[in-house]
Length: 501
Image (cartoon, rainbow, N blue to C red):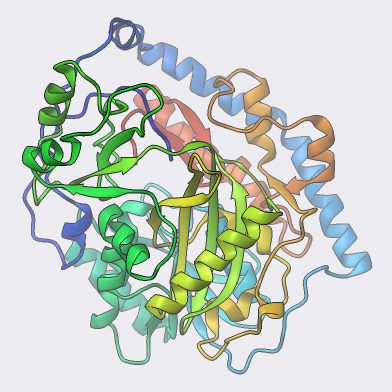
């Protein structure tokens, strides 16, 4: 869970009519009162001008295309190996061929899902919002068509109308959302307005909202008797004052943080470890401006490192699982085996059974002082860690077969030897485009032992087009605009900017 030390966010949002459920994500942002540190002011003052930003963008483009011969040779080698020796991917028989719409086409996880269900013989189309017209998924060998969507948070009525027209044109049976967090709940709330035969592989609207809210998710764990950190809701200043009344401020006592109850990229504010004795605590709590419309939670501070898990469910049964070490900018995935793996897998299985889940979720987890692994929040949507599960014979069934309820031995898991990363992320990291902070820097040996998450012998073009088409198309827009950017996230296929989602 990223905890940026400081960022000032104050925005007024246009009051527009949105479908039910989007209100859960597009909340009115309360003004945040925070004290800017001198070094933060210096950083703002030192922000590069438009020509400096254009220079950096141009160098990034040259770096991508300068590395293109290596990318092409690597893709060619993978394709030739596949043609000569056959595929390493096996697909279990599927009872029925479906027409499937995979959304979030800019994401690496979208092409992973398209391949997984396409290998089972399903017909796949993809979709994504602008400006991601030139998605790498357009070039996936398992994708027959690609559509451009309006943003559901900006043009909700037009977005819904476009989805409905795609569903009708493609005779869609199943929608698998792989979208950004700010858009994902729209699909859960859309399900009830779709034709009866069309399913959405996501939790229903009520469950999505319950899991997405950090406090109500915590209460789900409490009621199910599953381990969780101490968490309290904060909908006004009085809630916080009552919670901290009598709490010890001595060294070694339990500490807490205050954070938004629902994902909000604009509500990243200064993190304080509470309680503290001086007046700063009261000022800090007041500055959150918590309300029923903009709720916060007070949560027990846990210990690094942070881990994540990705789980798939059908009818309450766990059908797929991955557990991995995480980071704020995570572009390296491999299974973290051992006791923690087993404990978290059992936790996920218990959660699915308690809520009779069908869909997919991600948990962020950390240790408490006793060494127990506890979930700090739930993201009720797909995770990029699905890339490590590619190749399992049952992945397509776990995503698309509503009758698939496997035994424990047939749950989709990865090999502990599997290591997936994004090669150009490692190249740009070494080239100094961004600092080695909150991310993974692999050794040459690790890169040789693993492989690029996008590279597959039966489908090599998405690997090339992510690096040589999708990302360059976005960089060209930045070259024209002259806007500064922080980094390129090759996993989710976007240019990361200050205050982005």
